[in-house]
Image (cartoon, rainbow, N blue to C red):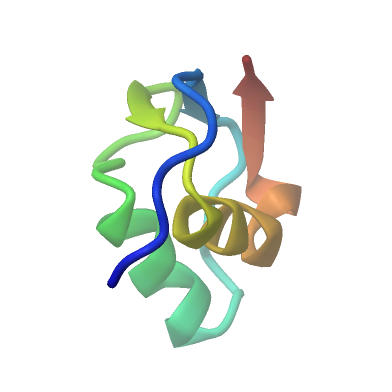
Length: 65
């Protein structure tokens, strides 16, 4: 059985630094978050999987709770 989501928080993720010159897996993570252009903001539910993605590319993002 999958774990229940413990929080109902929404995270606002903004892409603030270009991914040029970074590894392909980091570029793929930016795309998987739904970010298509610089300074675009998307909202996601706070989950452990999302936290892992954000930690991988924290140097490219601005995150607000």
